[in-house]
Length: 184
Image 1 (cartoon, rainbow, N blue to C red):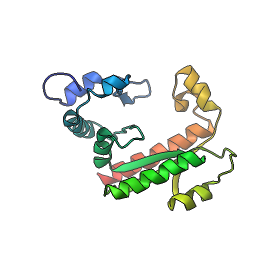
Image 2 (cartoon, helix red, strand yellow):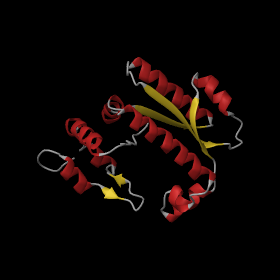
Image 3 (spheres, rainbow, N blue to C red):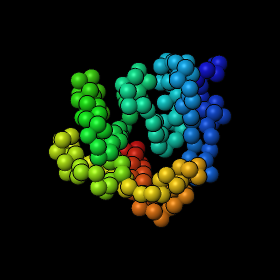
Image 4 (spheres, rainbow, N blue to C red):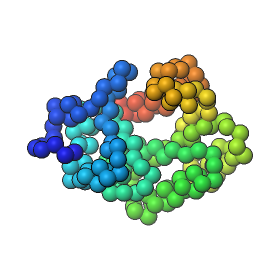
């Protein structure tokens, strides 16, 4: 974001890190004070160049409706709102959905992803759906393979590809990629 000159596909390629799985990653600033250096005027062209350079672009934003998050939402084809079966998270999801409506952000495809699905914590998926007045699109299984893979520094789909959670993530990714390809 701070490099001089115009951004193009070649310059973007120089800043991404390729994971052994084939995924390219452009990391966010690591420190909060560095985040302030990201200008919205430079972020929009970056998103457009990434969209031209890749089949699928995933932007992992904060849960706050900051200018950068609003810009990312404004350029999204599919918005994934991630939650878990606990009251504070469900409340945050409900507020996020209401905020999108209040801001009149017309996102065509909003999907709900429930993390740690199947954990017996007192809230069932149907309770969440009733509260949000939306269907849960994807469920990510609760699985001890996640903290193990995090501690090893590997994505769970690489570290434990046959685990329930890896299969959940692979199913979600396949659904999103299939949708993206059919939209082209």
